[in-house]
Image 1: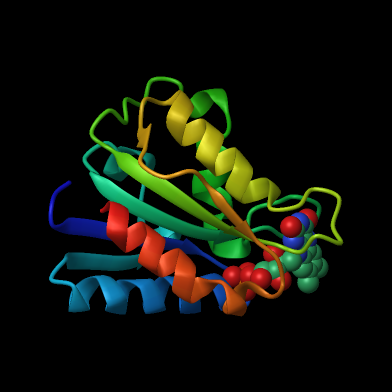
Image 2: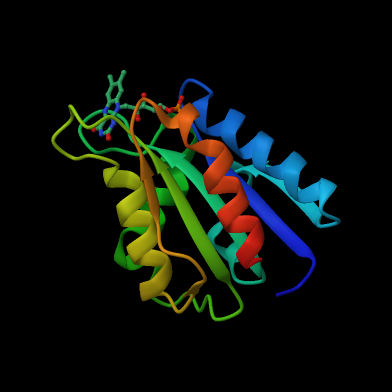
Length: 148
Ligand SMILES: Cc1cc2nc3c(=O)[nH]c(=O)nc-3n(C[C@H](O)[C@H](O)[C@H](O)COP(=O)(O)O)c2cc1C
């Protein structure tokens, strides 16, 4: 894979942003050229030119996207996105959530499925992390860095 990596977060209270930031720093220290951004900064069109991409996204409400990811997720998850061709993209999704909710990591699961539906290639299976996510971030980071 290329030495460029985009790290996109979708967050409501900052957990996903914090994890994305940690990952971005680790990737930079390994020599990657990293773009760290909120997913809200991207349009559907921007996604078409993206290559290696790591998404860190939480779930809110009743399986809904976090506030800053609402627009792009709602577009991606409907027929609005049907014509998108994400064939350049190799992606991985880290989903943050809370097992006490019925739709555990629902937004991350949907994002993962729709990116694949639109032609992107999953380079590593989605990881779902519960409220103890902090305990697992270090091993998750290592695993992703090993693959990219
Ligand atoms: C009001 C509320 C609703 C939530 N809804 C869900 C949910 O439907 N599914 C889930 O897995 N987690 C849910 N969560 C848990 C959050 O996804 C979790 O706390 C996550 O770490 C927040 O990350 P963020 O700060 O990046 O948004 C909810 C949390 C709150 C406070």
